[in-house]
Length: 295
Image (cartoon, rainbow, N blue to C red; front, side):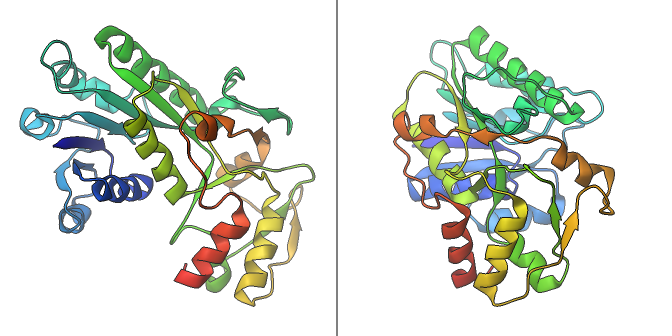
């Protein structure tokens, strides 16, 4: 029996969980939202509550026999600490060593750790250069997990995710609700990744059993957001939102910060090393599938 424990069964991790269940993994994990516990249990996930502010109850029982670990919990926004290691590092270390069950860890990070690259192409050998506080916290969390892996001898894969989209989280939703915007900043492009392709990468990492590595999880075509929005509108038969100049657009500081960095991500490693063939290699295939299935 292959058992995986997921810290943070959120948007991406739920899709990963389903992909692993299809491969006969037994899945358990945590959520910080008690209202979602029954729904997750209905999806055959043994779920525990973990807010990140305190240890989960009955941790030893919940983690017992875990062979694979997926960490999908963001660093603490106040301290920058990794909440999983802070509260359960010792519990996880107890699963390692002679006779231990833990074989591999997957940590979900972000391509934001590369900072602004001026639109240049980058890959996993590019040095991290985080600019935002959140990206700096992610870099620190990555290093904390590297330290844990080094100390325990467990293989660690770090998946740096590009802009995530999929059912319920895509431009079509905004278009149909009338809330979509098309902000134009010349030269601003970024990669995206469909949540199902994220799941395929993580599943391949667990299955192949290679030495731990960093993987950029991104599609084949970095593109300006207004181009993606226009394509989504065409697929839906709806008018695209009017173009707005970034310099004068009314945006929150958080939204504006999104446009402060631009880069093009090479995804060669997930293909050559993990053998992943993207189901949605560009936003065009991904959006077409979402329109067909319902966004």
